[in-house]
Length: 57
Image (cartoon, rainbow, N blue to C red; front, side, top):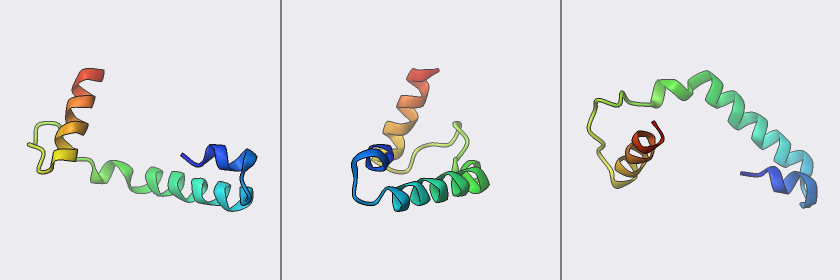
């Protein structure tokens, strides 16, 4: 993530603003975009993500 940029980068204010936008967007819409685990992944990335979730559980 951008957290390293906040302490050592050239643009700490912009980094924090970007993180805030990401967090706000995720809190507003994050769960709406996540398909149910019962659905079959349509992409390789989706399959990898689903496998990671299943392993974590």
